[in-house]
Image (tube, rainbow, N blue to C red):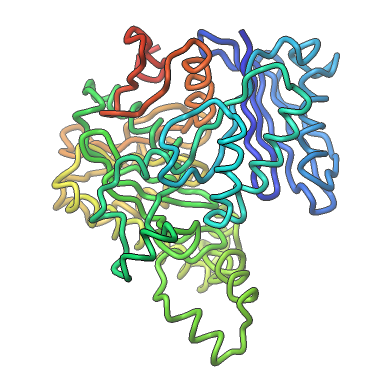
Length: 427
């Protein structure tokens, strides 16, 4: 059976199509710069390589339509028509405390996505656009939702989730730390446990998802204890491409009073003009590294600040967990920048973290899962390419077959206990 994944971002639509069971990807791709004028679709078929076509999409509806046209195209597609697809798995950023496992989408779930849009204003609304369009075009197949907040929101205890502000704001408004990018942290945590020959319920580690959006997750006994992103996707945690991470909350109030920023301007500054871009003028880390090596002082400063923040969270989370078995790097920067990994682990030998710099330097591109720590290092360091789509399709398969996916005790628990996700096995 063929299961599709659909992931609508603020200006992009990612997609993939899988043959299940067997977890075999047939194609994957992304429509970029949605609503921004010029755009393109990059489409990769497993057996035929990647093609890229310039194609502007004014709306997410246009982008999703382009995706469906592409996967059924006689030349580039992988199915003759959409009737070959038995289910569509959607990534949804925010499920709040209500949804902490993948679910079948119905009217109640759609209402919940709308309700939580106030907590994820840049993400939930466009997630919902993709869901509604896909459900209209493919109304006769099940659609499932996989929540990006679930891994953290399900397990983080209140003492790591709440802010020290009046309790009624949590009780009445839902103000708490939720954590994000949970599908990625879930996947690499399970894979790290497999690589170390441990049950995932026993593993303690720090997962670092580093890209345009970046998060650190402290994992204790296989579940999230703490996460660097909190209530929003902006003002806490690691330095990101255009977002600031940790920030004194008085700073935007000060700028609104002293520099005359409006509420909208302050929000735009925090989400789109801060981070690496605000410090250096660059947003792509490849441009940042090139400028830094060429002697640009602001770029060098941005790189040092970003990696210092990574190192700081590694130390803090190791203390919070009480010692870790591994540190895992993933996502675009985490998987492809030896400099970031080296600087993030610099000076952490006292914790038992010792990088093999030769292995670290070679772990770029599509080299797969790689251990980059030295033999005998008390804490293992891994580069593990993330695969959020695989989590989504295997959750969808479990739901289709009547097994409700619950991330309890960090081993998938289903009504049928013989189901084992492929990423818990060695290939």
